[in-house]
Amino acid sequence: MLRKHFTIPLFIPQLACPFQCVYCNQKNISGQKKSISTTEIVDVMNKHLKTIPSENNIIEVGFFGGNFTGLPIADQENYLKIIQPYLESGVIQGIRLSTRPDYIDEERLSLLKRYHVQTIELGAQSMDDEVLRLSGRGHGADEIVKASKLIKQWGFELGLQMMCGLPADTLEKSLQTARSIVALGADNTRIYPTLVIKDTELENLFLEKKYTPLSLDEAVMWTKELYRVFEEAGVKVLRMGLHPSEGLIGGESLVAGPFHVSFGELVMTALWKESLLPLLRNKDNEIIISVAPEQINNAIGHQASNKKLLQENYKKVLFKTDPLLKNRNYHADHC
Image (tube, rainbow, N blue to C red; front, side, top):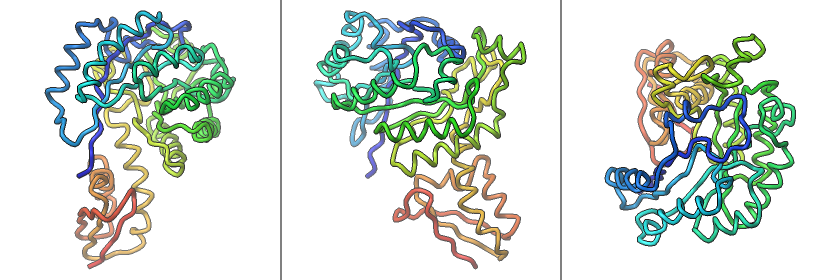
């Protein structure tokens, strides 16, 4: 049986961030207005654990939303100490956290290792110095390289998050960022198309017509190409598109940009569409397409768009699963 991976998210919005990136308002992005307390951590942990079957699954805790290693050492320890009993009892199997590349050093990594942190995700965003400067990151690509190498040397799993469509970004710059992430030995990544969030500098630039976000179609196309780079290199893509918080779904926090509640599904639909296009060369009464079990929904497509496309050439289109198939490999039987 395939083991499922669950992450219990604990948000510490914008804590210890020394810079205000032009795109960032974590309180609006995450939907959480204040930092989580120690009591709330226990409540969130227990609430999630009640809904996750522990048997044959991998469960971890993730500290997201802020600059974890920029917190005072005492605060880092307080957060991590709360998680230790869950680790020691085997209820969870790991801790991951997100932080900034310029807040990684030997002392901080020693602390994280002592408290059994498994994965460190860096908000790399871009490996292009101009994009980083215009985004207000406060560091360059060299800091990302240095921090990534140090994290790998200490034996942590490395996650490198990236954004596409930032000021001065291009598809080629984003592709180069993806290639650099691969070259740095990242174990996993997240791809976030840039959104214009309320109460950010990017909102001002947008309103002044000094910044234009990607359209939804452009963001899907860019992310599709980025996904392909990571897929070919064996780097796991954990997420595509921001988590749909209430503020983003309702529009209270979103000014503009390629937000979609099922953005990742749109990207996978586009990848599968390209794979299935050769089948449109034929016309027949019926076609049966066998795909990997975990890919069945992606193959059929968002709102069944890929199936509907094939139905233009075939009277009957059926999708079925085959556990022997992997990734986007498929087998088509024409009837």
